[in-house]
Image (cartoon, rainbow, N blue to C red; front, top):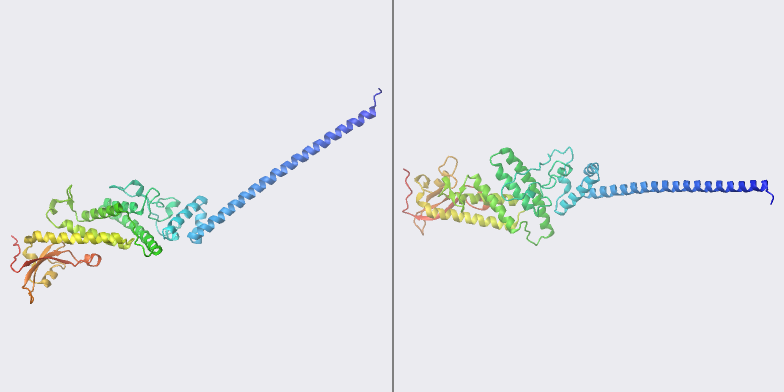
Amino acid sequence: MAFSLAGFGAGFAEKASERIDEDRVRQEKLQDEARQIATRQRLSKQAKRDTEDALAKELAESLAVYYTSDQATDILSNGKGAAKHAIAMGKSYSEDGFDPSEYFNMPDNSIANQGSNVVEIGEVSKSADAPEGMGGSFAGRFKVAKPTAKDKTLAAYELSILNARLNAGDDEEALAEVARKETIFLDLQKKKADAARKNEPDVEQTFYKVPEREKKIKEYRVLARNSMAIQTGTLGELTGKMKGTNALAMAELLTAETLYINNKLGNEEKQMGREIQSITKNAASSLNSYVASNYTKITTANTFANKAERDAASRVGGTLKLGDMYAYMQPATADAPATYIAGTYIGTTYQTSLGLEGMQNALNLGPDWRPKEIN
């Protein structure tokens, strides 16, 4: 067979052309794949931007439900985490009947952020010492006195405030800090209680479990006794220089009054009101019993010819001091002769809060009784 150079050249050219075509197809395919990858990347970035924009819009709309526009802008500037936290806080406080915008501090707010340390004493758990939003972080810009997630009720934090007051003693700076936190707490407590009553006007609202209420009363009792420098033994009996006095009954009146003020400024719970009435009644009864057992100790200085003299002695510079027993001559009537009446002077403080007159008459001593002479 003869070799054809022309045929060989034609075959080579055809093969070369096929390879060129394949390379071109391969290049076009690679270019197409690159364009597809770039498109997917661009679409992915756009989708991410769209998602972020949608999330930012959603966060802004949610923040607008709870905060002013300036507050919402400031919160968003701190990032998505801060925004989500603020929304969660806003939802929580709104459900409790509070206006979240009132309890968020802007950076230049004149209300100082609260500290996060509450001194622990007594039986209050450590989880109650620093309510959420009282630290120095972004969360600390919520001036809110409410318990952390570990606390079951507001009562736990309230008791920590009482314990801090007990621990403060006579430290004026510490007492002022406690008073500041207590004011904010009572405001929150009152708003929550008002919202609950508004939602269920025909239902008596309770804000403490029985043990919580009892513990609160116990803590207020300790505060009252401490303020009067009362010392008691293991069985609760008076010891020291006040042994044999009516100091415990007087301290119970102070307990009732401070509870009354706290309840009035806070949630105004009716059951707590009944407990206060019971404490008041028992204290007044104890004072009367003390007079019945100790009237022979009433001195000449605290025995008066009439009610006017008795009342005058209770004024500034007079002989009657808080807790003193007295006796005065009650004038005769058509049905009874003149007689001495004995009682206890408790001051005018409790008249408005507890409904008790300053002079607590307790016992009819008869016309022939005579006071103890002072040696």
